Image (cartoon, rainbow, N blue to C red):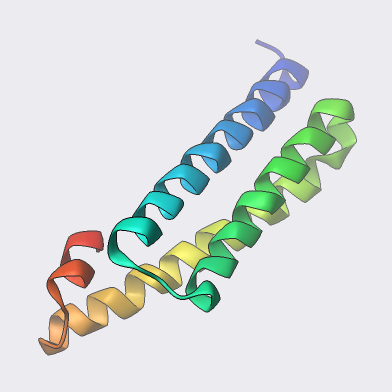
Length: 101
């Protein structure tokens, strides 16, 4: 597999992951409730991954957009995990927080 093929597959995989993320985040919100303020960063990450993936599919030179979208997504999820971990460690976590962590 050459570099161009790998980048194209990575872009498609990123779009697929974004769709999965959108579905699971929406289901979580419908099941457990979540404010729009909490949901918005996840939807921004989804939009960035889909948009950047499409840009890379059109032109491999747009790879930095996809890298930036992944960077935003990783930082967002690390921070979400970190505050849940902190609540578990202090003993103030709810069962929903413990389950999602």
